[in-house]
Length: 509
Image (cartoon, rainbow, N blue to C red; front, side, top):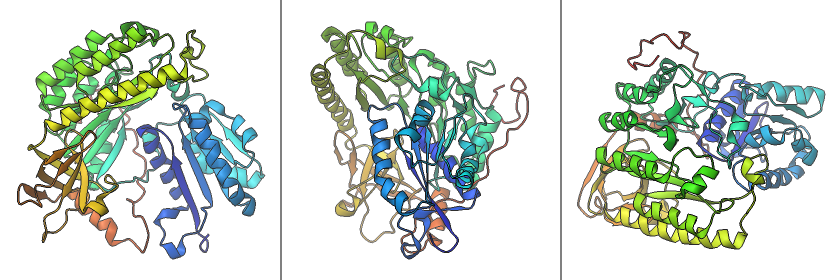
């Protein structure tokens, strides 16, 4: 610890929801007087922070093993400095609750997905009482947007439009840990987006467990499409993305809104899970392969250049070779630009955990390898179609692990493909948050290379307010420090009843 500073570190496991929740956790801690350890200069940075918070996931097979492994690594530091505090939150905390302190008695605080805002109080109570505090709420205490936020990026931000999920997929434990869907009013969402844009953000991602059922609480089935169109009316907002939709509730009005709103990006993550109708029924996925492929056809009819990604589970209980062949068929027809592929594993507490015909690991692995091989072929073929095409890239640090060695920079194209691009000699390097236009010179299965600028071809830079915001942060940086935007106070609710039209141009109720 440096002087009277109390430092913290947040370790995030899992999905975009958790990444955004971690920004809330950081904001709460800084509002309570803690300082981000990574934001200190090397000479002032303590070897261990005063508080370490784990924001956990319960979806992946190794989630618990990863958590307890990291907790074990921290135990010597805790023994050497009993005043150090360790907190565990997120989905695994909601699931395991008091079992966490039984397995790791050196943990000070356990809090759930519904009471993130309680963390500072729980830390203080644990310190005062000299005993672990476990507080798990069974329903949402406060919508996350009302909490302070320490955002990771100056030019790109997450915006929650809903939390929770009303689906009952047999393989998924998330609904029991995140609860039923709760929607924000569209005016509140748009107010937060406008506030972010005023701070320099040029790209936002709308977050929800199932974004296209947004509006279920206030009775408007078309609310999500209206929200996308309203985002198109916000001056200075360059890019809008969203994740994740569900095929069963995906409607043509959302496709129309995507196609007709220039700042909504032509990228779509549409989880397939399985191409077998029989397996989809066992998963309680309320769509079938024909409907899924029909959605993709309509998306590409309106947006021919859209990049579509997906999630696929291999080896669901009872999956036959014929079922798996159907998945391979749908993957070929879908032409996904990329896929997140998973081997099914038992999740205690889910209906699928008790199903008969759990498949042997060797069978699942062999099918998984075949799926990966096919998707690699499809991804590479889809990317090669872009060779010679011009793409606009939002520059982002940390996207290219080999940028220093290759003397390139990296970022995301409008369709969310990863692009590594060369910077011509003798020009100022674009800043993170700026937009560059280059031509693709080579396509790999998982990324594009655009060396056109270095080769005397297409090269254009558009400096943005996002780049200005990033540059302003760097001007404040000290040696070895990581600069992040200042903590933003939570967004208050507008207060209008959900059934009353809000004056925000959205058209939602």
